[in-house]
Length: 104
Image 1 (cartoon, rainbow, N blue to C red):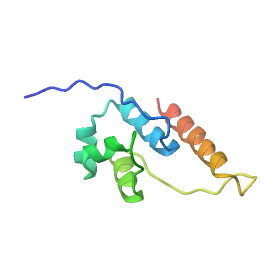
Image 2: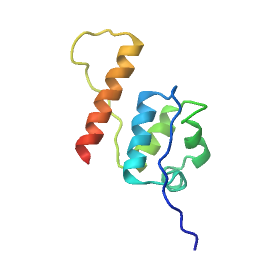
Image 3: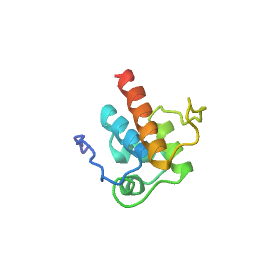
């Protein structure tokens, strides 16, 4: 049986904040792309491409999040709606990172 050692998964600078949060959780759980791919039904190389080349479809993103024990939900914005896309992305990243940090 071959044993694989988990290595921290790097991300490109263009990655969407939600993709960043997803990979941060994979790193926290020390999950291999192969394993999360098998569990989610999304090919591991497709998940890997989210880091540098492409954005996930909503269906694939939700499947991978669920495989990691995460749920994807919509919630009302606190105040100041509407915001620019950059403000929304920054807010989502901060919210998701604080949620993930509270789980550790």
